[in-house]
Image (cartoon, rainbow over all chains, first blue to last red; front, side, top):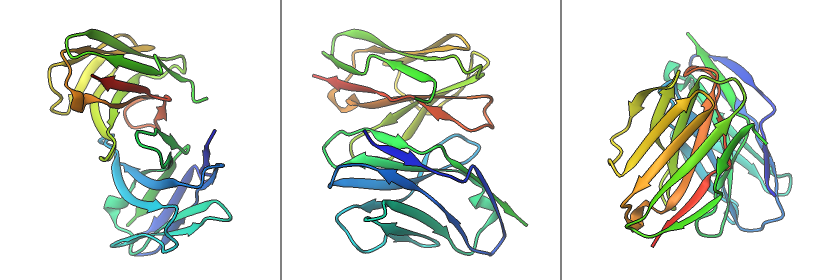
Amino acid sequence: AQTVTQSQPEMSVQEAETVTLSCTYDTSESNYYLFWYKQPPSRQMILVIRQEAYKQQNATENRFSVNFQKAAKSFSLKISDSQLGDTAMYFCAFMKGTSGSRLTFGEGTQLTVNP
Amino acid sequence: ETGVTQTPRHLVMGMTNKKSLKCEQHLGHNAMYWYKQSAKKPLELMFVYSLEERVENNSVPSRFSPECPNSSHLFLHLHTLQPEDSALYLCASSQDTASKAFFGQGTRLTVV
């Protein structure tokens, strides 16, 4: 079974600064995907970034980037130039590479961006 | 184990069938949610219940009918589904709609 661990229940950052959210996972699979989801107060789950395990290059989406360390099973999210709208719960998630696999979520990190 | 239990884990149904998905939590939470996870799309919020009242319905077709008889149980009644409704349906709960959500393991639904 897969496990996903987010060891930071809460984090805060000043507007315009950079913050890194940690995520580690445990799996015996070789083909899988990793995600960061953002959950604002609306409760929607917004996909922030996705990483395929077979790709060595770290995924980047505008101000969001990941540090994917496959050997260490680590998948951290870096948010640059933090904005007030980034305040949300962030979930790290794992999915096996087989079609129709379910997501395994971490416990979540509540990020607050302060003005 | 998050404290949110979904049954069944797997369900195969024909397009003319009627079935129900069940979600149960004994965490003392007052808010419950249904999400849909399709194969190639991000997670989608379907319904939100707070204190047993539906507070949000994100343009979900009427063939999906939620029911929240009490704060511990949430159902999703399914009727005349389409093959494209095949997906993983996730339930979640939280203390209130502003608190951290805990997810169940999901029901894998296949419509044939």
